[in-house]
Length: 186
Image (cartoon, rainbow, N blue to C red; front, side):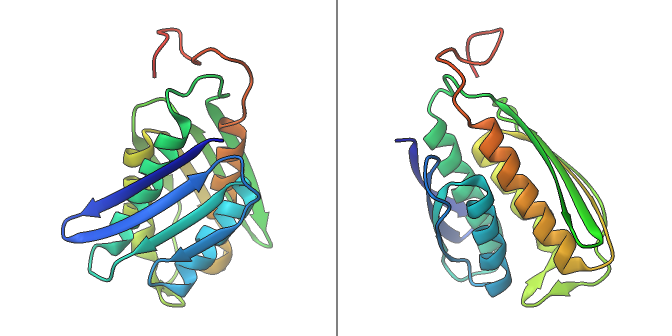
């Protein structure tokens, strides 16, 4: 069982998350945003991981939740022994496409390329996606590249979360027993 539990704290906001990498893709999330809950459910399903996450109300709950999920991912990987380490996926959703590549390298870094047309998708401010992913990359100690385009903002956002899920699934797959690094440590 590769289970990780973590609490995230960003400024005055707290969040908690639990990740089971060898799960069935179920999600129980309460982010305070119905749209973000929908995206995190898509992430869990495509990653085939079980995700439980909850954020307390507050201005920084988005970042606190990203941090908690990232920390839970990091804990679920332990010393990262045997994992593939790298993952990538392209996910189309009608006219939109997202490409995600990641490396559970131990070095957090986020690159995003793409734009949204509007300011909101349902109850979610699209400008919160990058801070959410930044907090997730720092917590999970991963390098993450995200490129996306399309016409419909909902389709773009959903293709990003689904591609992230597929990339995580690929990267955490067990391929052996060694730590996947020439240095022997991640």
